[in-house]
Image (cartoon, rainbow, N blue to C red):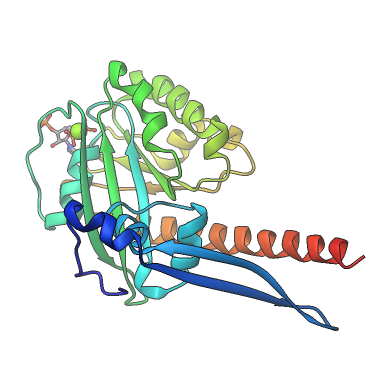
Length: 261
Ligand code: G3D
Ligand code: MG
């Protein structure tokens, strides 16, 4: 079951749904061991997790503790023409791919080897950035592990518009605390803005204190800066997962103390 290569077809879903794995979590207090919760996961749920990646949902939190299940759901957002699709295909093919305007979305699962030689799978969702498509962003960020927000470093005129969209998407309650990698793209162009100018124009200091962020200069055409950016994003995601796990444990322990009087 833990092997990514296994696959199931819809036809046998019902049969597999009958088979359940039960996880029992026990918590020890200094005086006794308390059985805390029992959770059943159907094989079908595990399959969906592997196929779709489900961010921080309750069921996947058990699976994401296992190394082979480390897959991260990442949404790539930003105004049209910022270079989102170029980023996606640069990462996938390690070469420049000529793009056409994205009408809906592109999605790819990409294995990336990080600096510590650890390979992680990112499931990217590159969503169209035209104004009429932006209301859809919200549905792609539901339960996401991280957001990559791409800006065109030479598009000074639309920097204000990019700022508005960045702040809007990070303010959504479901996205509270979700790490954001801001990609200052097209740094190869002579008149590109500097990082400090972009930081100021995007008013990044005004992002909520609960939103971890990192600003990364890149050139998606040749791939400069992309790996470094993903590394930072990965670190922020791991840190957040750890924090959420610790918070959950703390809450559970408090609850047990309350139950034990
Ligand atoms: P989008 O998906 O955000 O809408 P695209 O943007 O990836 O389609 O890219 C829009 C244009 O920007 C493309 O050029 C692409 O080649 C270019 N581009 C992307 N990244 C960079 C970069 O780092 N440097 C430079 N100089 N150009 C970049 P076209 O000509 O096809 O419109
Ligand atoms: Mg695109």
